[in-house]
Length: 573
Ligand code: ATP
Ligand code: MG
Image (cartoon, rainbow, N blue to C red):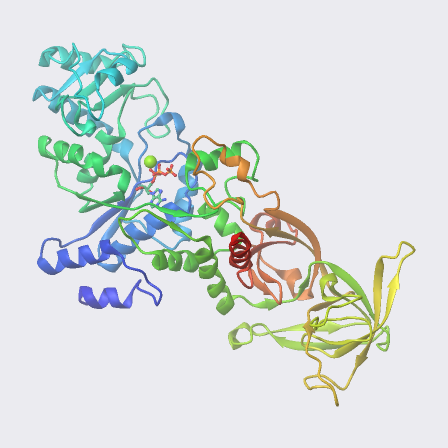
């Protein structure tokens, strides 16, 4: 199969946005500049992955898939202080859930520590690295600024023998943390500050989740990253724009070390989504401060959170496709994410009825022992989803919002003396409103027109249709109505303000609803359209514990965009 046909059959869905990386690789293959495409996804295991990482996964695994290459999963585990096995496990799970498979075993930058150390010694022998005793503050001071050249450390001219000896003693744990570092000897006057003798190794007497207590020194990210790519034979090191200025340094390493391959780095813009934050540090703060219920809280923009909220891998991939890849910084409207999941669930989620604010209705002309059940399609356009049974009984629940005692003109739902159709059932008329001693509505007494099943009533039009559930057969469910976690479009825009000030106090509203009987069998993570209400997903944790809890994934229509529109209109003079 040719590369072109592979690309055409794959990935590029209807709404695909431009992807300059895809075009670039296609051109490289056409011109013979590239043959086998090897990419890698290199997360630091210091938090759960978020939607921005989903984009990077989609970029790296997706391109490898499209061009018949392979993608590695490599944990960039050079900083033992912040890393945890739990994060490693979650990252593996997220990638697999998204539907991607890494090539070969999981890799770890820490597996290359021996090689990296040998290469550090190589640089020392070549006179291209030295051990520096300056303190971290002094190193910063000596480095200079964007407008001012740096000045050489007094330790810069140590002999090769002395440097080799000190480096070895650093590795054996003879010195305290911060007492010494190994630095590349490049150019303290370089216009690019990354080339002013960057740090290659730091002393850290830390336990590492992969290498245990073997190492007392750890390579810097800059020294480990490019060389790890080279060791793995990565052809395309795709990364986000903040590494553009590091590229000359990575190229210097590749030029001065006997590496087995020459990966080429191309940078693309990070993806940000409005009304949320995509920074592991900030997400960790939300978790640590108990603002949310863990990394996979359905309000979190983490992959695990989106999953628990009801997002599907298909929807997330589609979202990535819709937002494209470019070098221009961009903030994606969260409404696009909602669009991606809504269109997936519209086609693939079975329908169900669930009343969120139950109001009792007594059907006065239905006998107490009435036994009737409507057989209804699981999905209006999907025969493969089978059917479900909706029992009708004398007492039913409807939603409080579907009744008004004094309705405005265009209210087509239930009101005193008015008629409405029970979805999939009969037309009913409200004959009496029953109130308690405080004047609160307790129940409605209605009568059924039995001559209206699947047909219009004689001589009058009934416009409204409402959802309902049999009081005898309905199952109580907890429904968690999730909304955006932040009220502000760019919660972390103002560096001096606390992004937590912009939290949406109503990002979670929990209600007790009643659902149609079929939902008693909902399995963890099963998704439904609650008719007239929205899309919901059975909470994977609660459901496993035998509790019926449904998380709102997204509304039926984009109410958020409407609110924004209103706000914008209101803001106009
Ligand atoms: P964060 O700033 O959230 O901590 P990070 O870049 O430090 O993210 P890493 O674990 O180093 O997190 O990221 C793994 C890969 O994911 C990197 O290649 C990184 O460039 C990419 N990545 C991270 N955030 C985004 C984003 N918002 N958009 C696209 N790619 C991203
Ligand atoms: Mg990082």
